Length: 348
Image (cartoon, rainbow, N blue to C red; front, side, top):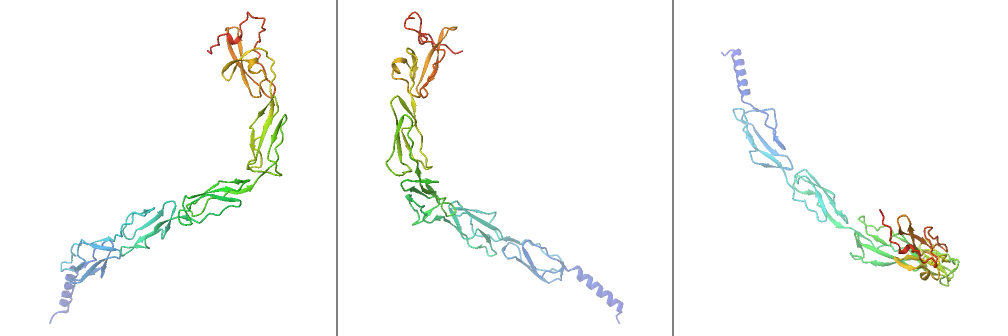
């Protein structure tokens, strides 16, 4: 009869032997699952590796049996991400990405003048496809432009049927006697709308006033409007200070207000002066007086250095100030030399 103690001891030895031959928890591989996954395995038990969704196996075994040695074989299985089709080119736009592998996302932007027809991002799916489908960059267009009141289209060439494309322009023109406030050209923007429209307004100007010692002519109408013109003139011995013709501006004012300025009566009887870069006889060049705005340069003497220099004088509305340094010689003092005939001073 076998002793109970012997039976217990033999059973303990059997379990110890079995425990020594079990396989440990299998190696965890990146992006892979193990079935079944337990803490230990008895000899003869099998496990199977499979790549997670979105990944594919590269090399190595996928099914293993726990050997009597209790050591799993070396596993060289690798699970790599699926790769979606190349999407690095978007016509009239750009694609931003790191890789095209699962589960990465790519984003899309369009160049100015184009808009995304579709999604602005897509993800590489478990099946190796982009979701949602890749977009396209469609050109931006603007509808026919509205026409401001009292304006007409001067330049309008739609490039897409009745619509205009990004950066296309339209030029307006106001009806006669209407002034344009704003830019006459509008542009189709990247948002599919037009830049700010100009405004055409009827502009009236007051009747121009007659200048003293002169006259003004303008159209014989009850009202003077934008772009109407008036002409000015002066009586004899007076000079027009300003343009001969003025125009009614978009501000409702005249472009200028000319005046008539008096000529200068000469107090000097005899002198040689510089006029427009040339030496002239003062009494001959201005025998009818100097006109308003005329300039001359008088010759003066530097007695210490025995040389000559010039000082300028200008006729301003009937008045001219003769330089104090100028000395007018009497015709009887024939032995004296005029300043203009003396050598010029040299600046040091």
